[in-house]
Image 1 (spheres, one colour):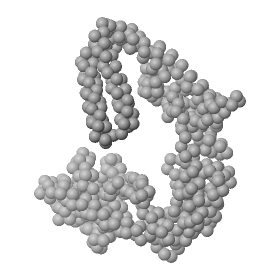
Image 2: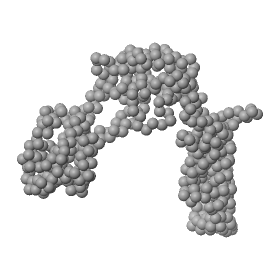
Image 3: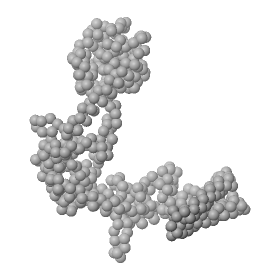
Image 4: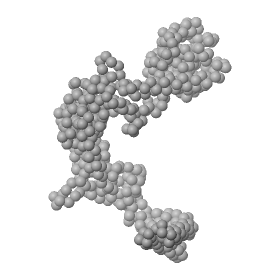
Length: 525
C-alpha cells in the first residue's frame, strides 16, 4: 500500500478527502476522520510537506463541481501543489470519464503526482496498479450508478405513497413541524391563494389578477420563500399571468399530492426535463385542502374557456423578428379599431403590457403596417446599394447552364405520366365497382368527375413541360428573367427577410433599428 518517495522535499502535498451520504452506508471506515488519519500517517512516514487539506463532506463522487475540489484545482493552477493524495480512487470521483481525465491528462500536464493509498496507484512510478486504474474507475462509476438507481427507487416509492420529498412545498403550504414528508397549510399566505381562486371564479383573467397583486405589493411565491434569483430580469419580484395560471391548475390545493413534474436526465447531470401531465405522480387526499373540489372544477372550466380566445394569432411579415429596444423582449401584436372603425394591428411592448402599473417599460405602440413598410424600404435600399444586377445575372446564367434543364423536364414528365396512369387505373377500378354494385351510380358520377378533372390537369402540365423543353429561349434571357423576378418579389418574402435580418428593434420614440446578419449589409445600413 505505501510506496517509496525518494525526494519528499520536492513535493507540496494536497490531502483530498470526500464523503457523501451514499458512502456512509459502506461503514465508518469511509468517515472523514478515518481518511484524515490514514493520510496523515502516510505523509508523516514519508516526511512530506502538506500544503493543505481539502474536505468535501456531503458531496457525491459523480459531481466534480465540489467547493474543496475546485479550491484544490485552483492551487494546482497557481503551482502551489504538485502532489495529490487520496485514500482511494473513489474519493477522487466516481465518474470514470472525469476521473480518467484528471489522472491521465490533467495531473500529468500540470506535473502533479497522484497517489491513491488503498489502490496502490502512484502516477510517479511505473506499476501494474496504474495499468488497471481505468477498470477501477469504471467499477466506481457503476457503484455510483447503482446507488443512484436505489435512491431513485426509494424516492419514487415515497411519491407513490403521497409523501412530499421536494425542497419547498407549493405556495400556500409549509412543511409539517413534526411529521416528515408531510405538508400543512401555511396560514400566513393561505388567504392569498383562496383570494386568487375567488377572483378567477368571478371572471377575472390571470393577467388582471397578476396586475392587481402587483399593485397591492403582495410578495410573489419566490420572494416569500426567500429564493435567490440568479439572473434577475424585468419580471423579477412581480406576479405574472403564467404563475397565476399554474396555481389555478395545481391539484395540490384540493388535497392531492402532485409530484414527478420533472426528472433528472441521469445521475451524472443536474439538468431536469419537464414531464407531461400524464406522467406526473398524483395521490389524492394526502393533506388538508385549501380549495374545495367544486370551486377548483369551475375555475378549470373558466381557464379552459378563455384559452381559446387567447390562442388567436395574427400573421405578419416581421413575426418573431421585432423586439423592444429598451427591455429587449419581443413586441406583442394587438388588434385595435381606428377612428374610422377599421381593424388595425399595432405593436406594443410585451413587458409594458404585462406589468403596466409597475412602470418597467413603455408602450411603444405603433401600427404594424408602418413598421413593416419602413423595414422593407430600408432593406430595399441596402440591397440595391450592395447588389450588382449585372454580376448577379452572370452568376444566375452560369447556374442555369449547370442545372441540365432537359434532364429535369424529363424526370418531371416521367413522374406526371406515372400519376396519370395511376388515375386511369383508378377510373377502371371504379367502373368495375359500379358494374358489380359495390359503388352506386351517384357516387360513381361524383368521384369519376373529380378524378377525371385531376387527370386533365396533369395532362395539361405535361404539355406545358414538353413545350418548355423544346423552347428556343437562350439561358441568358431566362437568367435575366430570374434576376428581375428576384428583385421584384424578394423584399416581400418572409424567408428572405429572416435570412437577411437578425432582429428589428423599436425604440421608445418610434425609431426603427435593423440588425442584419451579415457584416457587409450592416456596414451599408
